Structures are given as structure tokens and as C-alpha cells.
Image (cartoon, rainbow, N blue to C red; front, side, top):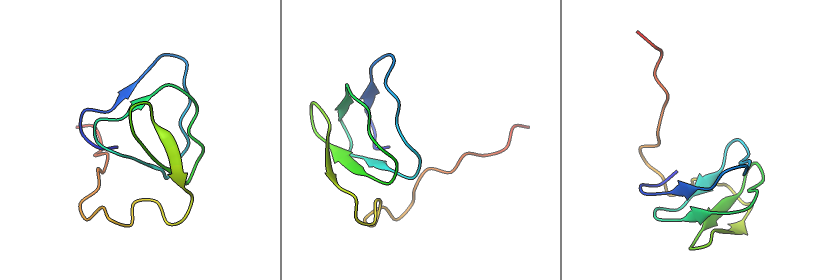
Length: 62
């Protein structure tokens, strides 16, 4: 997910997807998709995150 992304309540988002910075997610985004915009819409399903060089990685709790 890009910076300043907003996800409204009761919306599910899939695994392995990319959401563009500043997007507002108001409906379900399926797994493996790339979505962006205000309101976010799916742009494609081909190779999500291909332009992301340093993606977010969850670190283990200490």
C-alpha cells in the first residue's frame, strides 16, 4: 500500500496486491490486483507491484 491510503470499514482486500498512494478504498479489491484512485478502482491484474523497489515488510514482534 502506498502512503496516505484510506480503507473504509467492512472492506476486504486480497493478498499480494498494490494500492496506489492517496487512494480511497471503498469496495473490495481482489488478490493480485493493482488499484489506485479516489475512489480506488482495479487497474490490472498483471504483475502487481512491479514498480515497487522497496515494499513494506512486516517485522516480527520483539
